[in-house]
Length: 155
Length: 168
Image (cartoon, rainbow over all chains, first blue to last red; front, side, top):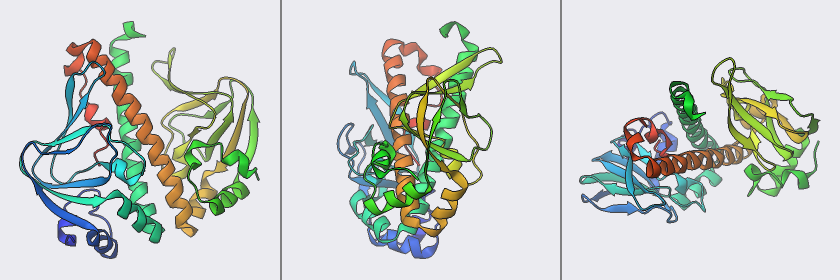
């Protein structure tokens, strides 16, 4: 169980009404992970949603040629492992604690069960996920087009 | 009205509960568009969500007034025009039929109204859309990883890769 004051520190959840936060809090756990602890590995089934309360997490990806790249550094207040909300979805990255980290974890299965018991919560949260993904795609397409315009020889 | 069997061919609706298919079937229309028909115009507020039964649709953005870039070619079973389902959204791309296309259409205005009345429908539609975006973001991340494998010197230039990491 996680108190709603802690859940409100998470950007993804902070605007939600208290009654929804209480339901989410009831199925959440607060855990502390050591530096270098691997939370999940690339291509493994994603079972937990993670929300970073304090600390730092690296998201790494291994290329086809075996090179490892750090694609993102997750800072406090952010959620990752969103694939867990979709079910039957494998993780795109390996997540490693870059320092001792306090993390809220929620079982994706329990979260999906909560959504199916209260579709309004499911709708609100899934709409948030869509909004964020959509703006990322837009931003990335803009960056891609900007790069092509700067390097027209690629076309 | 469209047949439920046709809706079951759409990837986004995979895993939908049966009773919701009926609701969508009642709202949907089946249309055939000729090659070169523009279904969506970038930066405009579209009011139609499209599900492609047959044909191919190019997703484009203008690079310069002379050059359009094709970002993706949508194949049968895929959906597009998500902006029509989200309040206050505008289209991020232009969508043009590459060949004659058979398409199921839904009115965005009507769907948004239904979402207010039926959260179950809204949840499953948004879950489908989120999964579809995850797939696109994953594909782009893989393309970037492949590029970095071949051209590690580009790493400094790719300054927005974290936008693909599904952190929310």
